[in-house]
Length: 182
Image (cartoon, rainbow, N blue to C red; front, side, top):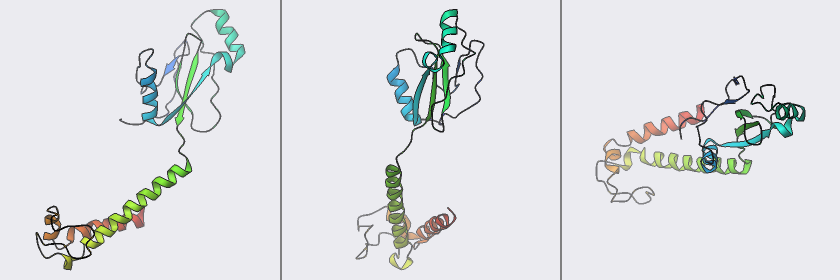
């Protein structure tokens, strides 16, 4: 996906148009691609049209029949985090595209946190198990009763078992140290 787009300083041209330089140059009618890009970026889109946002400026624009709408300062949507993605002329008149990071529900965030905490707990349990040097006395040692992580047919354990649990102890120390500091 690449880096996420960020708010930058807006420098509109003489007619009032501007597009964020990191917004891909989609062709007209590529709405599905635009929607996918917005989704990939984690953005919510809000369109503000001159005609509905500022009727006085809209009258000026439509009566003049020119491309200039530099005098229009579009109103940001309510809420925090909105920034301008593009302001340009359309068949329906000037339009401002405001975006912000899509909100994540508290329930979704809490579920993801619980999932990650469970994974971390399982990792720590496995590291503790493998870090005990008395469990392993050399390569190709069969597993002990009660070893929930290894079968006698686990060749990947050869490297871990050669060092009497040093790799697992080092990883566990790093994990637990990061947990205290994080």
